[in-house]
Image 1 (cartoon, rainbow, N blue to C red):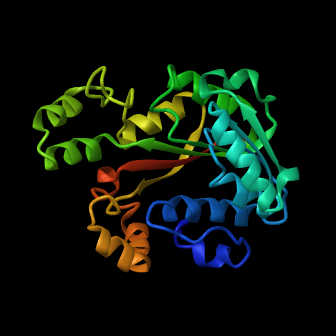
Image 2 (cartoon, rainbow, N blue to C red; image 1 turned 135 degrees about the vertical axis):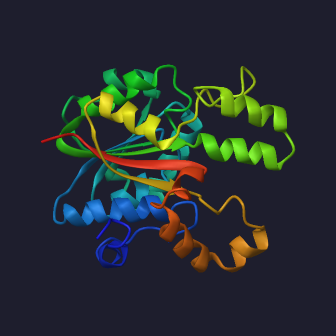
Image 3 (tube, one colour; image 1 turned 180 degrees about the vertical axis):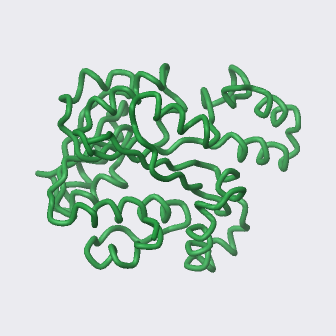
Length: 255
């Protein structure tokens, strides 16, 4: 039984936000990890956690969360959101970016680290991943979300930008050049290799937004529950997984 299969069991214990097509797979995996650690109050690090879409629900479940983000506006919104949710005492906001993470977090102090949509924009993703591993306690887990290269190629091609699609497909880093908003994109093998090189054991890889970005708004909004279930059903199955807009890797520091 995978983490996605166990989501119905874990949701009875963890009251998180409603599952949406864009977050269902990630929350399913996180919920299963919380169930595995049931009864523990975890120390969580959310790198690039912004306004607290993951941090606040985790704090509401009783865990202590530190959010590191470069945007003071996002951290201010996080602080307000935590206060309004009654968890201000369990959420700490730290201004900084992923490249400076090593100087912001104590070594071996974290049970769960979230690093979502960060590795595609930092100067040196390998050093950021190394800092995540250093921050984790032995046996701690990492939830890593990265942009998918294949989806970017297909998206540009479907919109008629064939030259950009060709550039994205040909570039080893999955970028279309200096005007691209992202410095790199990943396929599953390259993302897994990056984490493994830092000493993490990759346990699961899922596609996120396999279909959500392709569906007409009327379908996505009008049949959201069905879209969520289809996203979960396809998330771990190549080739659907590999065509997702984002790839979610769940990894662990060996005990």
